[in-house]
Image (cartoon, rainbow, N blue to C red):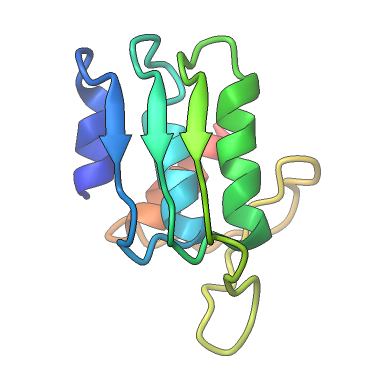
Amino acid sequence: HLIELLGMGTTLTHLDVSMNRIDFRCALALEMAFRSNLKFRRLDVSDNPLGILGTRSLLRMLCRDQCGLLHFKAQNCGSGEGSGPNTDPQVFNATKPEGRYTLDFAKPYHRALLRALY
């Protein structure tokens, strides 16, 4: 919930969320929260289990013209779960977003999924 609210602020330029157990779900929420924030410049997500999916979200932020992100630090973020019994079955694929989604809007990740699909 906090990440979603931080993205609404227009004055935030740096954010350090290192060592906060941020996974691919939270990385997508970060991407959607800051996707239109031109003042946001630096992000530190070091020592979080981002995995490949979370890293992709951060790379998409760098590529987006509407996002001001210029640098992100992601040391020790290679291990993260992509799928498994404890993983949310709703996984966003930006290159192939089709499929059925069952979303629970009480979950920040599901709200971020809706924003990504919209």
